[in-house]
Image (cartoon, rainbow, N blue to C red):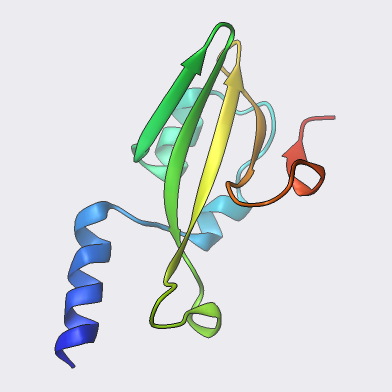
Length: 99
């Protein structure tokens, strides 16, 4: 029970996002829309013309294991709008992009 309580408090303190919010992301959203949906990012990277924000997303109950309760996701912006987003550990061919 202590282990579960520790994991729960860690998840609450780090500001994890629930998977349902990731499913609502769409290409073309602006930064404010993403921040409203996902909250503040855990971290970000910047390069000329492109910024990426990183989020910790809690897995649904059935996908969790004691050593893997969350996944890392990214949202990349070009000119202030979402261009690409997806799981940070997926290969480039499986990532979601604007069309």
